Length: 298
Length: 298
Image (cartoon, rainbow over all chains, first blue to last red; front, top):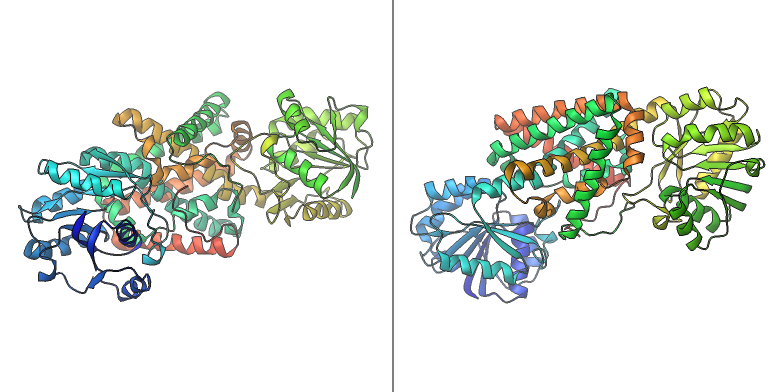
């Protein structure tokens, strides 16, 4: 599919791209640029045929596909190098979790003739690092591609084909809708998980009870996603501020109503909310976003 | 261990007790009282040797161990029957998730000479019904026993032995601490899950986006426990009102602080919270409340 493909940033997602591209033979040569020496030595252990670059200079001039898998806060440092050395024939993409900020950055900083179409594969885990990558991480997962005024159709088609070859279900969206949708389905759940864990820890102090040891009753389910990478998530929270604040406000409004229903012992209202949740759960399973196997604890 | 054991209410938990007791041969005879005809026919299909009772009358006079596994709102209807027919030699327990309310009910309504020591096995699932029961549901799980002024030591020892034979780690607590601890580790996470799902559904309407279909990015993790039984959870929310309201208030306070950190782009404060969460996750794994296997979606 490509002659020379470059992965910039090779943690969980980058190394999953590396494995998937290598396994599916999607590029004659694969290049990896990674700053962390620890990660480089982990990547070498994978025994995947690729060239590890220690700088982004003339060595990238004839790359035809660049995929940026660093935290989003690194993009501003990478763009000047792409501007200097990359060919206008290349396609650039990234895998960042918010999109309006990326588009603004591209519009401001990227050389006009370079082609960047943003991607967001809805895949990942609470663990970080190349050792956890998986060649099937993107299999049967959504991948959102962002169309903007500058997007060239021909290159969008190539990018679509790339993600489809990794097994993803590709969908094209505008950045505004993307950032609104994922503020609710991803960013809000993660920040709730972080805050629930904080509340449990605060309660230990207030109650003087060792309560974390009884996490199996519900808390443990949230603690998993509250272990996700802090730099990645800080970047997400800061870059989708407006939508996330709206989502928090709506959630707090619902929590306060729920609290009133408990205080008033409003049986009808409370049970209605609980039954409706169950229906959404069924919908999530029908939409193949989760499986229908009961969980009795691990 | 017992001659005649009676399970009142045979859904997920009751049928797990039934399977566990039968499998481990803990009683010469097992009796089951269950109101729902649908559940009775499911229990019969399990082919476990037990007698199904259609009423609680003289037939229960020489039962030596009674375990009540109905939603807590049923207890008030069951107690008058125990008062009339049960022997003062019997031990009664229940598996309800809140304890001060149960103790108040016992003190008010139960005949003084009857012996009820409350239990709370920290085990369950989002599914309901006897078909989902499991003989090892209680294996390696906490079981909290509630000691109060009336608790007879000899009977507490027997109850402890019972749960240990089912594989549980038994711990004795007072009802006040119990209700405080589980308001944070169990009740708060469940009500947050319900409200997150409601917020997602509300957002679909506000945004006019089909966002539930992108649940894999975080929302799905919460939807599982938001599918739990609505009658059981309504009873819990109403009966532990004060502690739950305190937990909600503390959580909202944390959420508002987090929101401010996002709005101010307070890197230091935000990253601190995210890193601390990861530490609690490690603690939860060390305490064997979850396993350390990364989750990449199901």
